[in-house]
Amino acid sequence: CGSSVVLLKDTKLMDVKLGQLGSWLAMRDFTPGGILGAIRRGHERYYNKYINVKKGGLGGLSMVLAGYVILSYMWSYSHIKHDRRRKYH
Image 1 (cartoon, rainbow, N blue to C red):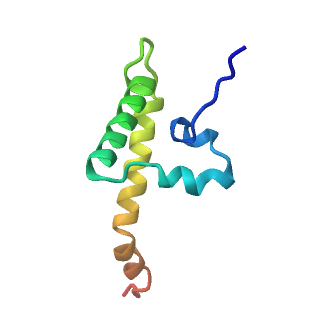
Image 2: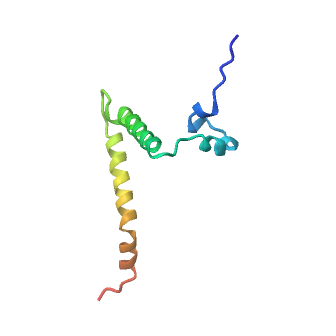
């Protein structure tokens, strides 16, 4: 009977225990090529799960729209905060 041993490097982030998080992060590839590969894999996973489906819905597009709204609010927050203190005459 063969036991399936999964290496810490091969485990997904959701399967990592909290005590193993530091050593799991130390095994990640933080070179520009590794970060670009992780972004590419994340984009492919998102695209295949929400966009490239047989019966599409509004789930994937609404997530992109919500992300855009949040990012644009964060980018213009200092301007909004400055205008909030201004008196209206």
